[in-house]
Image 1: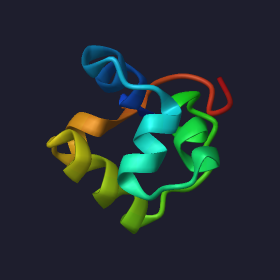
Image 2: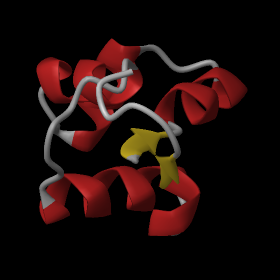
Image 3: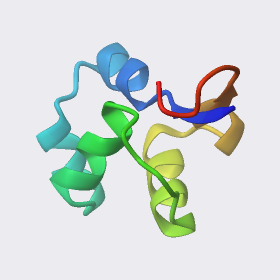
Length: 72
């Protein structure tokens, strides 16, 4: 199982770029990019809280587990 992030979908719904999200949340563009492309290997609780608060969603709405290969 692999953890995935829905930030890409939430950004598209609000027509936000990665740079805009980084600037408005204070997260680095690298972190936002890794979440966007599902290329993160661990999740910092502060990062999770920041993106959930920014998009006004619960943790389970932002992140989910996907069956299959861990490195998809």
